[in-house]
Length: 132
Image 1 (cartoon, one colour):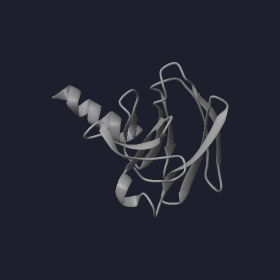
Image 2 (cartoon, rainbow, N blue to C red):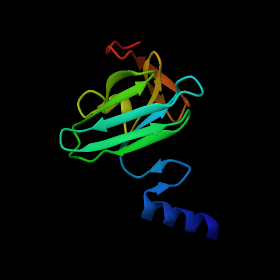
Image 3 (tube, rainbow, N blue to C red):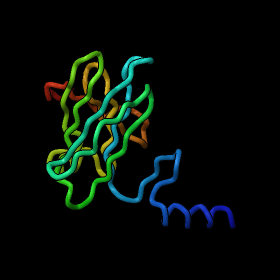
Image 4 (cartoon, one colour):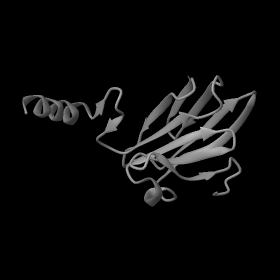
């Protein structure tokens, strides 16, 4: 009982439990789901903030905080010397699709919205913007 209480206090103060990915507020995440061994270079920005470049190994992810002021987050995804652009968060477009977590698995064919509860893709968009 004491251990559970301590964990709840730690989670509410930190907002994020390292390794579990639990969050208190809304967030956007990109996960490298390219073929194993391929690194994914991610460069995301909002109209006001540049998050810089990050290199993600297979299965690794990058998180981006979403606040009430965040309107959109656009990312460039680079692998095999090609850059693909995709909007991972848009307050109007993804409000109902994402809920509190806009988590995208980045594949060679496009970006797939990931549902934590079912541990499955809800649907995928090609990098040209079509919904599959």
